[in-house]
Image (cartoon, rainbow, N blue to C red):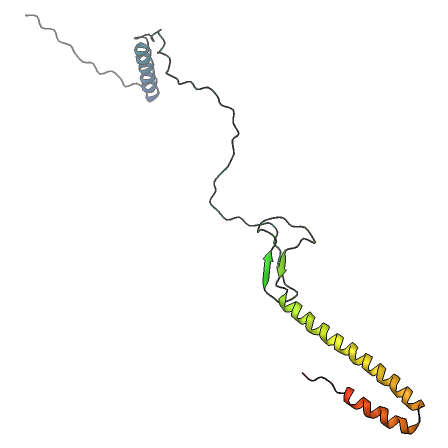
Length: 166
């Protein structure tokens, strides 16, 4: 039998830089050998299945849906100059309006009643003024007459001077 014995001689350790370089070289050689093994297949994959639809011409309404709160950049405060109940509103909220546009119609009945009352009072004052003018005219005519005729004329005037009391 032949016996072969190896004797291990201690070799001096290599510096750290050299160890790193050796590791990088071994890794590079290993990658090159692994990359050279198989070649990429030259056959292309089958084309994907695609559905085809004929285009249709139609109007598309673009819209987006948002969650949030919208606020106008400008606001206007409306204050009534008179009191009353609103009869009609002539605008929609958010609609643009211009100076002089009719916004509200107030119920005219209270104002019409007040107008009618003041008009009647005015007519009464005019009729009283007419009566005073006719009395003054009559008094001038009486002063030109004789004293005996004055008594008779003033007696006739007394019943007509009666005023209407509500």
